[in-house]
View (cartoon, rainbow, N blue to C red):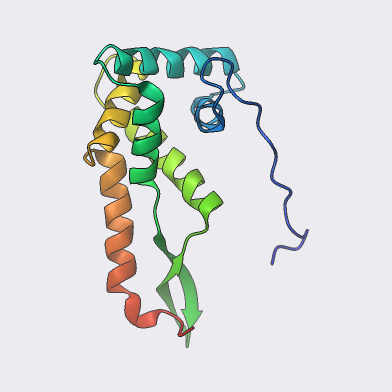
Length: 154
């Protein structure tokens, strides 16, 4: 347990267009240097790109988010003088944080011209179970399964 005790989770206001907490948290994740209006514009433009492909952007993002969310992850633990990667189940909040981080970093690493195009392409890729964010999740799952020997017996 952390020294300061548990950190209280903050409620986030729903985004004005889609009335969704998931979208609001994505906007906050995309935000750079406190520029909320720029981040909002980027996310909404990405959703417009998705809707131009005759898809419901909120449904596509929700499914992509579920596809990227991990169930297992490894944590380093010191066991008998050696540090080993021990697989642990991920709680819902941590899984959502990781999914947003992976989507964001995968989108920033893409080669499209604008950030909204990058984000739309990565969301669509995650929706189809492809792309860098999905690869990151699968790599983590694979690492956790290969280190299953070290899992604590419950």
